Length: 113
Length: 116
Image (tube, rainbow over all chains, first blue to last red; front, side, top):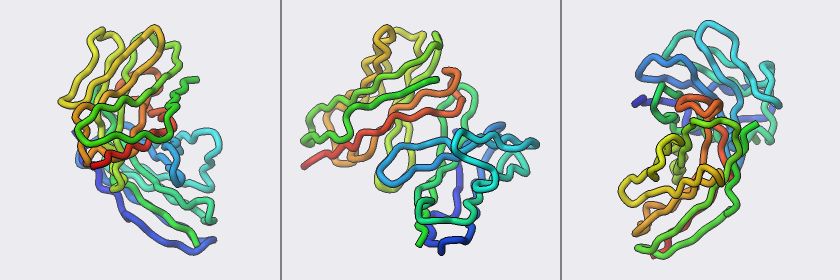
């Protein structure tokens, strides 16, 4: 199993500002994933973060808006840049390991005003 | 591309009764995993149960079981003896490439409410 600590748990931000979300895992993992969950909706993958290389973004998500860092095998950050009210969502990080299920952080509830 | 469909946006059940949540998927993979996740109001995603497609036997975890129909690409979740703590949003999920550790595609979710 993997224990994931995600910070902050929630935040209220002004439009035009940026927020960085941190994800710390208690073991080394190859891939980390960042998801967005808009209000009342399902989870959508933003990007896959691999250590030592640039993140791979899904269609509809771009690096300038959601820059990701992956400095080592236990840590990653997602930044939501130049925020607008449409960015109000829950953001979750996740790790998957061979032959186990995915584990998730507690999520960050972001409200942009 | 893989798709996962949950056709029941909301379900409700009385405490101690049984409820079944539906999920269908589309894939060209032959061997793969399928998952049901639960998300209570705390936002924490919790694995409920997983099924490996090469296993013909349906997975069971205590009060939770699945009805896996590979040919029909159907993967329903049955919750027996429902409890108030089962109130949550439930997601069916399929990993990329069918593996146990790929990025996940989620269904739309089903909000389950258990009434006392």
